[in-house]
Structures are given as C-alpha cells and as structure tokens.
Length: 288
Ligand SMILES: [Cu+2]
Image (cartoon, rainbow, N blue to C red; front, top):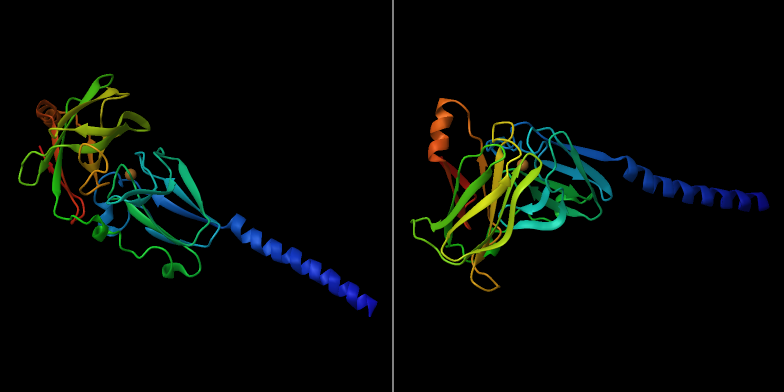
C-alpha cells in the first residue's frame, strides 16, 4: 500500500512536470512567418491580397509571428488600419529590406495591421483557438467615422530629388470640388530607404497650403532609393478636439526616372493626387 502511495505521489509530480513542459514547449517553438514580397511598395499587390503573404495567419495565444521584409524597400507592420490609424498593439516602425520583425501575441483576438508607408498593404493575425469568434469583427469601422460627408484631397508636389539636396514638398489640401480648406491638422513623414528625411508632427495649416523641406537626401531618388511621403490627416480645427475624418493616410512615392522622360518629369515636378475620403477606401491617381 505504501508503495502505491509513493508511486502515486511520484506520478503526480511527473504529471505536474509534464503539464508544465506541455504548457511551455509549444509556446517556445511555434513560429509563423509572413513575407513582405518584392513589389509591395507599389500599389497592386492588394488586388490579390499579396502585400503580406499570407495576408491572414492564425496562431495560438503566446505564439510569435515573424515578418520577413523580402522587398527592396523599407516597410512597417503596424496594428490598426490606414483608415483609423495605428491602435498601439504592435508596431515594427520602419524596418529595412532583408530584415525581420517579430511580435508575440499574448491575447486572443483578430489584429488587423497595415504598412504606414504603403497603406494598401494590409494583413491580419487571428490569435486563439476560438479564432474568428473573438476580437475583430472584420469591419474596420468606416461607420465610426461619423461625419462621412467630408471629402478632402491632398495634393503632394515635390521638387527635384537629387542627392545632398533638400527635397521641397508642397502639401495642399482641397475639397474634391477644388475649394480651399482652412485649419487643417496633419502629420507628414518622408523616408528614403531606412532614413527618415522629414518628420513633422502636429502641423497646423491655416490656409490649406504648406511647404516642407526635408533634410539633404542621402541619395538621389531612384527606383532603388525612392522617397516615400506619408501625410496623416488629423482633423480640422484650431484647438483640440479637432473634427472631421481623422487618421486617414495619403502617400506618395517619388521615383524620378533618369533619361529623357525623367528630365521632363523633374522639370514640371511630380504631382500625385490622393483622395482621402471617410466613405471610400483610399484611391490613388497619378497625374504628371
Ligand atoms: Cu510598406
């Protein structure tokens, strides 16, 4: 009988040890990798849901996801959405081509994410066995923006983007009818490769037209070293709280080509018009 008791105690301890091992081993070893493929810095990958591959992954609580930047441009993996902005759950900030970013998910839920520089890049991580039952509802909340009638256009015009010269960036806000707007608040960031060349936060623009100058460019803008400009709209008003659609992001990529066409493009500057709307998703039109 005593032997049995000892045996039972022994097995209870074994069971506890085994339970601990089972609880920790899968957590430590599970890893999911998502690729940021070549070309995702240009719009188009969203048409086949291949800006992050795979676009959606499912992991257990405590598991890690690693994003591998297999592109030639820097990107971010930022929780939230382009429409509503970062939600603060995780953020890689800019990470360079050929590097990785990892995040361990400790809570159940569905976590949408996007690239701050290229907001057409979107993906989602669902955490927990219950999977789709928890967290995100798959609706990124256009309905929470309330005043869906305000439509704004951001015109981003850049000057010559040569090495060691400052890049001039004119930002003009207008309505879709071309009417000027007042008291616009926004953040503007520009990057080239891994370098941040302009980062102005909390800009207040009382007549809707503003010029920004970057630091001297590390390199002339090219296909390999494009300049990415991101404008995040923070609402209308002179004092907080600001009103109107907030957190919308407009982006422009400056890639002057060298050659005959490039000379013309550089001479007239490159104009890109991005419609920012609370109702519709970002639509991007280019105009030379
Ligand atoms: Cu990106």
